[in-house]
Amino acid sequence: MLRKLFLGLIAIVATISFALPAYAADTAAGAKVFAANCAACHAGGRNAVNPTKTLQQADLDQYGMASAEAIIKQVTNGKNAMPAFGGKLQPEQIENVAAYVLAQAGNGWAK
Image 1: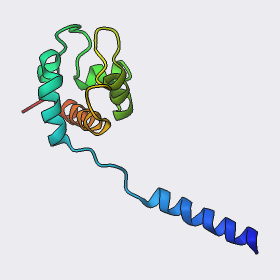
Image 2: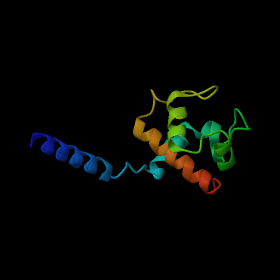
Image 3: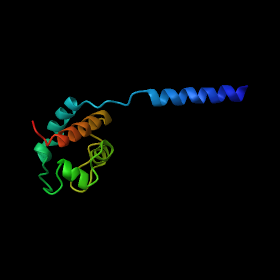
Image 4: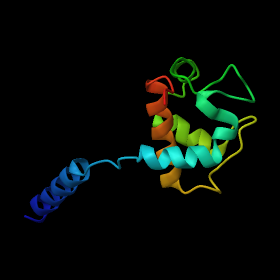
């Protein structure tokens, strides 16, 4: 009996865990954070430091950066000439920036 109750409880927890919606990033908020923190080097999806590694879709694809997880990791930890923003921005802000970058890359950084 106790085993059935325990297995039932596990099933309920698993169902609830997978049924909850994922955090929906806010691209409008991401645009504001991008403008304040990223646009100096990445205006219009370009890269002022390394022009071959832009935020254009083709480059994101080529360099394995075409996912929110990859962008969040790089923005948080930095890499090469890019500084880490994990100490400056909140995780939610970084998630929003990642969503904004992916959305902009998907539409060619058109305004």
